[in-house]
Length: 67
Image (cartoon, rainbow, N blue to C red; front, side, top):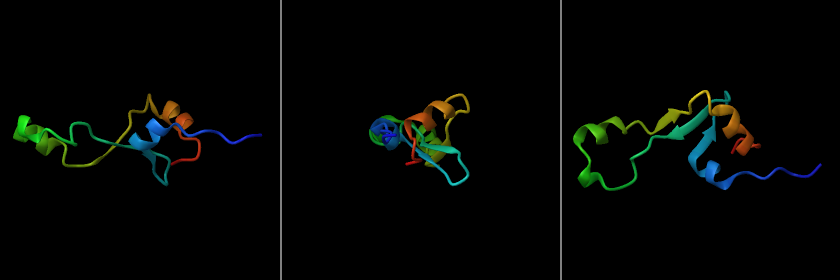
């Protein structure tokens, strides 16, 4: 049996923890901070969040080796 390919877009957006949870980065944290309110900036300070349970199965298919 051949190797499975990792989806590169998913690899950049998600990671799988040692316990099997799917970790993601919160949105709106990369740029254009001058246009955002203080509340928007403060709410995104915690970098790690977990993916929604309804999406976990699909994400794990895209990351067969747990990248």
